[in-house]
Image 1 (cartoon, rainbow, N blue to C red):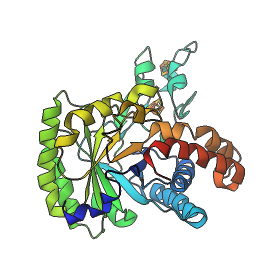
Image 2: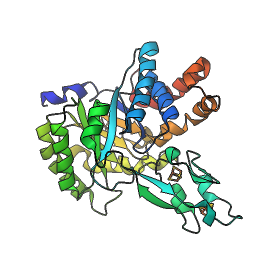
Image 3: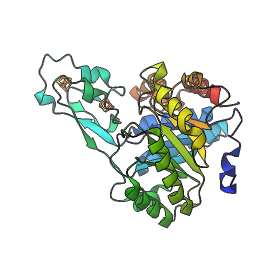
Image 4: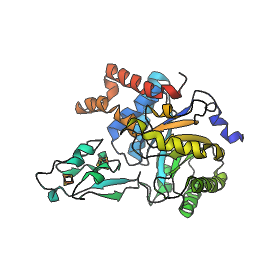
Length: 336
Ligand code: SF4
Ligand code: SF4
């Protein structure tokens, strides 16, 4: 094993796996992000992954700081970027004036973040899961690209100074991927690791095509000389929908996991509190990332605090309960 991967060694072949909280590549709910970061930092995640914007990164850092002060745990901060059009980097919109007054509003009922009301979609609360788009019988809801670093990745890196970057890529997007890596190479920001998120969800290709694309990226990434995380994305932004939504990422891991280039293998996309049950106990990946499910189980706690214009950690008893819930989610993956 190359020494640049030593940072991950503790996670390999032990019960103490690498766990990441995904706050959402398009999620701008600052208050929720601060609380989520505090809760999951205290519960023991290794990294927190947020949208690439200064105020969002600061919210996550505030949560991490709280955890460091009270629990001594301080995960790294990762920002998510993409090398092209990607469903993680979008939002939904519609014109409420076009809606019939008698519509039973399936869009509103399907939204996990309560982003929809009579006035349309509240942009800051939408993270682009797409459920409302499919739900509208009149096809009134459309999506639009929401890429915070589209035109200025170097300046975002300089302002945010993250510990790590995750690049969302697709099989056929090799040239834009090379360009993103070139920018990362030329930045002054000292990254500790780089994560590559890819799956088959946006491409009709086979697992072998994906494997080939990942090896191509491994060659390109070698010039950064950083430890790499391969994030296998199964069914994006769906972990809160049903216990078995982690099947796609588990299947992908079982198909190509043992053939991936050096690095840490992490599951994402549909992951939740049941994903470990879908895995063979003798063949766990090196880590897991929890997104929509991790956020959903905290929603009642966070909404209670937000309604009172406070942070959850201003309610110690409720905060303790929230951390306990988060620890339950992490338990199959963490020794302590
Ligand atoms: S359902 Fe998803 S895409 Fe639609 S508004 Fe809510 S978060 Fe956004
Ligand atoms: S489901 Fe469609 S028509 Fe009904 S309220 Fe939502 S956007 Fe309007």
